[in-house]
Image 1 (tube, rainbow, N blue to C red):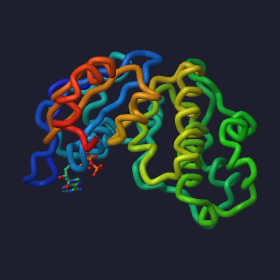
Image 2 (image 1 turned 90 degrees about the horizontal axis):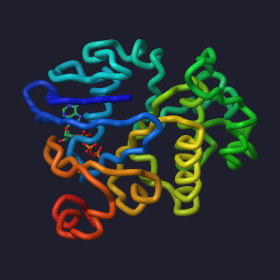
Image 3 (image 1 turned 120 degrees about the vertical axis):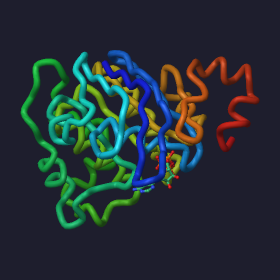
Length: 233
Ligand SMILES: Nc1ncnc2c1ncn2[C@@H]1O[C@H](COP(=O)(O)OP(=O)(O)OP(=O)(O)O)[C@@H](O)[C@H]1O
């Protein structure tokens, strides 16, 4: 579904990614773990065409998307939920969702408002509330729900569990499980090993802009020195 190979990325003179390679298979959920500043968001932004200075290969469904503009990548079926919640504070929950509505595509599940409100019961109760009246966790849910209104095939979630209440974290895990059941492929960036393990099939760890681990959570459990070294556990 997605192949990233030898990806270098920089902001001005600062080299942030050094040869990142990773892949995401059809209907897989894969976590990109790493500490603050390791390069997880930069990897996602590079895939989304939001980092200008980059070299390497990024292939989505067999086609190179390196250098393509974000809107074209989005139109090809890639949904992106950034770390900072980008909702419209002056629009209601329903209106925020309508903003994300795109045509149905044959090769991806279609998300209706009713299906989304089943999946996000908090948002259902707050349909008529303004975006700015929602809690941080609800805003995070709304950003994900709005992305799903675009009927993506693959979704990139940047730190979905960050800064949200434990009860909402549990809902977030359910949401990611439902995305997998619906057939989507999901790449999540996470600092939280526990959450990543709950929702993902396997993991990468990024440190200083390079992939330093590629494997299963079981292997991480059996070798705690890896997480101790590269993650804030
Ligand atoms: N727009 C930018 N201009 C310059 N440097 C940046 C920019 N965005 C990020 N960086 C730097 O790139 C490095 C990697 O940041 P990135 O956001 O990819 O890390 P991360 O692993 O996602 O961590 P976080 O959890 O903090 O988001 C950091 O040192 C950061 O300061």
